[in-house]
Image 1 (cartoon, rainbow, N blue to C red):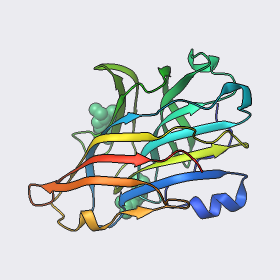
Image 2 (image 1 turned 60 degrees about the vertical axis):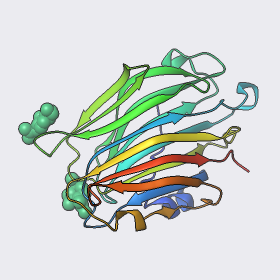
Image 3 (image 1 turned 180 degrees about the vertical axis):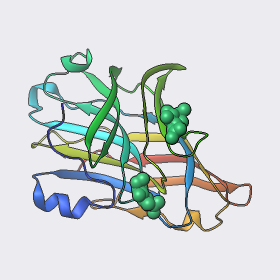
Image 4 (image 1 turned 30 degrees about the vertical axis):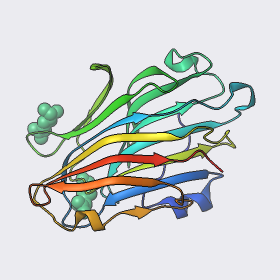
Length: 227
Ligand SMILES: *[C@@H]1O[C@H](CO)[C@@H](O)[C@H](O)[C@H]1NC(C)=O
Ligand SMILES: *[C@@H]1O[C@H](CO)[C@@H](O)[C@H](O)[C@H]1NC(C)=O
């Protein structure tokens, strides 16, 4: 479905030059050598999609996991001019789990998501430490899932991305009860937060650590609608 590569959180500036992207807010934590992640979970409330009558491009909202050079795991909440590809109707989002890397993009199932519907998105490293399973669930029911052999991951973040002159985000987005579990306790993980291009306006509240910095909680991340 997607014809244009999506940037990793680290590659925003180079891709902005190469493609006619528009970026809203991005925000990330980690991406240091000592921040090996084994699990990341959040509950995302996407707000309402733009008016389909004025939507010419594609808007993507997503939490993702990366190490800066390898795969980008991202569960995207999208709106296209026509949402029938995921079984959606006007006024709904489309969701898919996906992995983006050197060998291209691979997707889990496509699923429609109603406006303001909370969806829990989990990235879980496998017991053998080499694979990741990303799962999107609504009311405890899995709607999309994908396992990929993506190796070590060090950074988690959120982004809004606008392709082909899309209608930008018209609604505030919220990430609730984010939990990130590290391989080893890292008391400095909370100091690694970064905002991306046009990152101003994202509000992060309730960042705290447990177990000496092994488990990190972020109570709420609020991403404003596009300016
Ligand atoms: C990032 O992932 C790639 C692919 O698995 C791996 O080769 C590389 O060593 C990883 N980098 C870090 C810093 O973990
Ligand atoms: C690691 O575990 C995952 C999930 O169970 C599995 O899909 C993958 O094939 C395993 N990889 C190896 C190298 O055993």
